[in-house]
Image (spheres, rainbow, N blue to C red):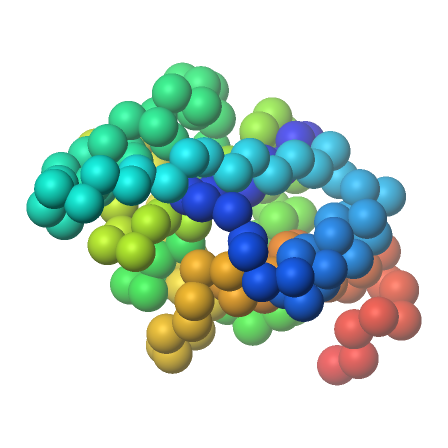
Length: 156
C-alpha cells in the first residue's frame, strides 16, 4: 500500500523541517511513503472561497479516482495512536492501494475536496500551524507502523 501526504505550501521553520525529515526517514522502512508539497496560492486579491477552490484544484490534480482520500480536518474522526494504527491496518487488509492524506491551506478545503474525500481525520481539538500538523501526522503515521509491528517505540 502506498501512502501520500499532500500539503499546501512548504515547511519554512528549520526545526520542524528537521523533525519531518527524521520521521520520514524512519517511515520509509515501513511504507511506500511520499509527501508532495503543492504550491501555496499567493494571490492576495482572492477571497477565502477562491483560494480554497484553487487549492482544491491543485489537490484534485494529484489524486487518482482509485485513491482513498482522507482530509486532516478539525471536524474529522479523532483517534488515539493505537486506534489510528488499527485504522491503517484496516486499509492495508482491505487492500487499499493508495491512501492519500491532505493538509489544506489556511482556510481549509473546498467543497469539491469534501465531496471527493472518503473521510476526515482530526489530530486534535486544538489548533496548530500547518507546519506543526505535518510533523505530528508523519510522527503518528510512523508510530502506527511501529505499533503494528509490535516494536518498542510506542509504550501503551
